[in-house]
Length: 262
Image (cartoon, rainbow, N blue to C red; front, side, top):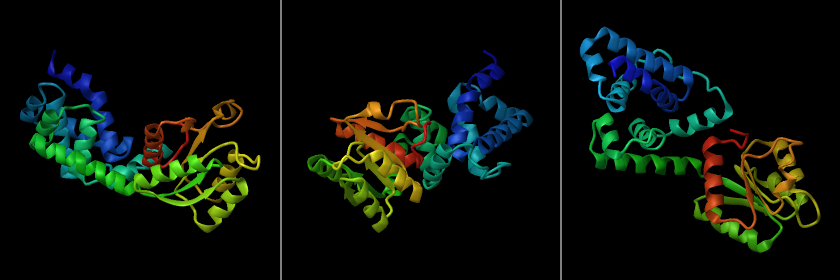
């Protein structure tokens, strides 16, 4: 395969990485274009791109690290991209690169080390740093709308175990309104069928009328949300639930800062 064909085959993946790294499609493409233009003007640089994805990503990383890209800070194209951009932007650049290379791009620690010109041990440390920084940025307050006391207590333990705080608990729509009046949460965990016959759906609508935050429904009645008659939630956990499922939903909802469909 010619060098041009190698680059063309790997270019879609490089553009994906560039978008995640810079925070927008426009900025990512600008850096990729700058790297390719530099390679066309420098035979030595062009030759260094041979050998697959690792040398291509290494060359791109140097261009990005130089800060000489033509377009930075372009507006994100979606709410989810904005949320992810805010989270990734809080991570120091080397840690951000290491995290994306080993997760999004599925490079091994040794391949990532070659791209970043570091040791595998340094890569492992950078990935751990990135995860810690994301978790620290995601810490928030959580409102639990649940009419079964034991389940409410289980959710409280789960939430606090993840490092979040509980802003309040509510067993009815009226209690949910009162809890929000006292403290606006950063995340809502909501059942559908509440103690006095009121609806968790209505309670959530009340809350979203006062502010914007991710919502995760945890319910024994998922069919009430999956009707096609209204926008359906991205995060819907069915009772009885596995705690790992709730943890994953919380992590994803907070990372993107939204529960709109992806």
